[in-house]
Length: 404
Ligand code: AMP
Ligand code: MG
Image (cartoon, rainbow, N blue to C red; front, side):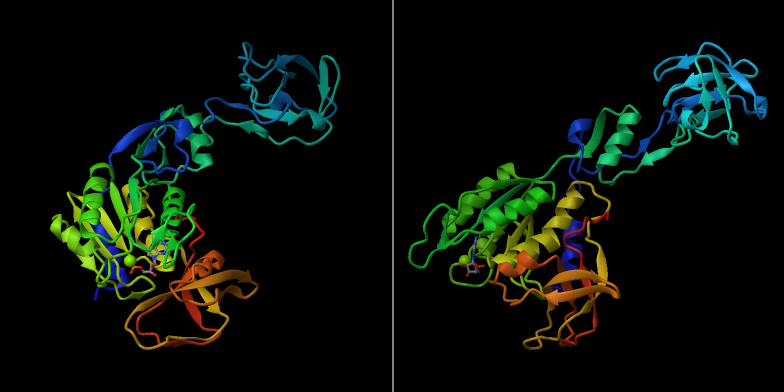
């Protein structure tokens, strides 16, 4: 059976990034930059004052000297005169440094009157000046392709005059629940029925990943209905996620219908828990994830496989969550040797001696509240049968960004 890392490798190997589009800077936050950004300018663009104070030539400074003040420069003004010998120019933060000046002394370190100023404290040459290009040189690569556009990046781009940003198109993700037993969240379930929790849960995962969720109406476990729904979905989506009906039950139609539609199976079934009955196909180059219906499995599979896939489509450089080693605070035993990688829902907490992990309770794939408490997933390799309190275990930091 396909292993977790093989499955992930095959998915990422099959998924190309989506095309590039230009978006206004105001809409770029949270997206991945699609191309390197090189500066054509210096930042700051000119030498300017970092403080409200007096611009002077330090060589003129003598103990007890009273200097003449030549005038005042506000931010946005252009200085027209050099600083005359033994004179000072009153200057505000951000105002261009007048020619000749090499130092700014903050107001609070001076004694001054209407047209004079004295410097009772020692002054260091070049202090309180922001030199042109101190931050960014022309030609410098300021941001590289694949970088998350966080607010600081938006600010830097604005300072460089980049008003349109190349990013990759956000994937439209059709999310389709299948199951005769499912009713809408607004409905009261009848006998044998349950509410469809996967659709809202997965749509919100997709949205938090930065993609566009497109929820479909629930599809009953009828072969023709599943066929029609998938065929229709493929017309509009960039990627399709189905939940339920992907195992070997009498009413599991996802796999046979995809075969009927000519989809290419990349793999079906992964040696992992939760989420084993999971398949991945492509149809006309579009990825299709057949996700098992158990709510915990569904969320874990979306986290483990769909998230990296979407990030790759959106052009992010880092597609996998940060991994850490955590100290396990309790014993754990595999119910039986099953040759599967187990993903344990854990609560992670930073303590003095390092990161600690506690299980969130029942690890059954039907217990969705185990996901509610989890802020990480411990990855237990297939051949590990038990863990002891105090063991170090690898954990995925599922509440931290990949580029953390
Ligand atoms: P399946 O993968 O179709 O065999 O479903 C496995 C389990 O998950 C069954 O107990 C289903 O009732 C449940 N299930 C399937 N789809 C959903 C859903 N959309 N929301 C909540 N539970 C579901
Ligand atoms: Mg089902």
